[in-house]
Image (cartoon, rainbow, N blue to C red; front, side):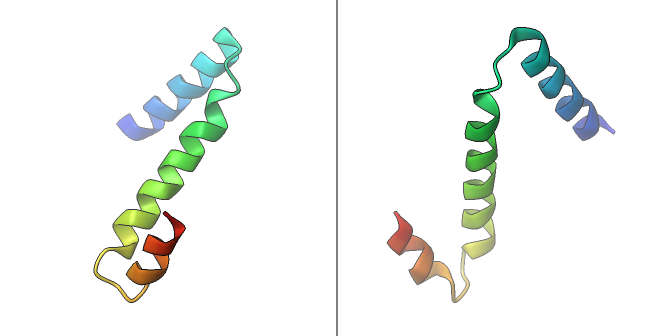
Length: 52
């Protein structure tokens, strides 16, 4: 339940302060973090390293 509250609070912050440019940055950072976590120790690791 706390995770949902954080997401709702984040979107209310964006709406109130008109900071919509932050949303794509946060989304990309989350996706990169997920890619790194899921790619550790797998066969995808050499391909992930070529991206950076």
